[in-house]
Image 1: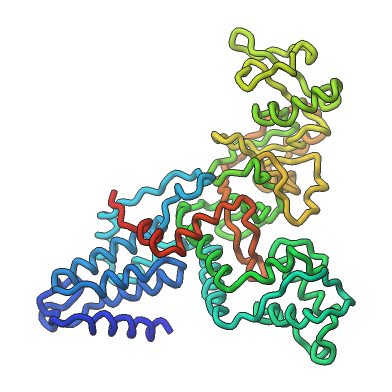
Image 2 (image 1 turned 135 degrees about the horizontal axis):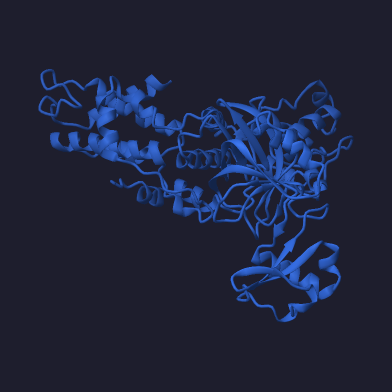
Length: 500
């Protein structure tokens, strides 16, 4: 298929040229024979490859097709090469489009990369090597191709008229089966042929699987949330995957031998060792009003039985109203007021603070919660210095892990089974850790090796069984990114070559 598309593309380009090519630079054409070079063929193939990775290709094709003179043709190929290098290396849309994205901008020495690509034995593999090679990214590229094949064959969508429950009868059950079949869930069978309106148990099993694949409660009840994903169009699914692929291109190419990958909207933390998935833990992310940022940090130490210095935002917005409503709140929660005196924090009686008069600018007052069963950080905190005051930690509210959508925190990532993950990161050196879990005192433990942590707003991935997982845009962070990638005017503006 790639060869056929490439052949058609090349024919289209060269049919528009009314001049011979023998005078063009031998970088793209053979000066003696006037024939296109292998390097040019590789460039044309790279344009098609970019399209297969969710990147814009129409503007690059147009750039080549509009060239009229020999010099213009030669310059167009060079310009397209630079554009592909940038898009493959750092993406086509500026990361500033997402205010929650706090990774440092990737540097690109365009001249050096161009020289390296042109010096390679073959252009296409050299360009392809600039793209992410992470298994998640490569899996999503395949899923992107599969979702594109759905375009043009989409069944009718379903309006919400009632909740559909297993065992019931409804005329729209046939439409449910058609859309599930379209998505590959094989929901039609002999029973559906005999009783097309019956919501039987086999269909319910497929609905539960569909719900699991989209981060929904797996209750087999088809209501507004399930219908919203069931009605998600083929083009919507393709655009979602293209946005996730773009975010992957924003990320560093090297993650290290051991690292943690946190999916903010996917509510999970995965630990990779030697490039392989070693552990997976479900998690809780920040709620929409207090979203978790996308950024990179490094876990260097574990804190067992941590105390919690309450962030200013939480103190003013959440705790002051509770303190005013219940004078005993601080004592029941094990919280102690502290005041900054001569550059040092000193404990003061809780009642000595005029909480009703406390203002945002009163930074000489803070609250610290002692270790214990009520401590907001639970029993273990992964200390990873960062400017966002976001950490991975335990929680006393473990019942929240039972929910399918878990955007509950004030920005930190709460991890289920965090003690097991801590044992893994300690690499067998767990004696002090186990002893500390049995003691009430706070203890800091340094990891044998620091572990990078990558927090990412990725709404799609393949699970361990190779099933495509899609998630809600909990922060509406993909809206502008998708609009920029879909809108031709915005897309062409954002993909102008930036040389550094």
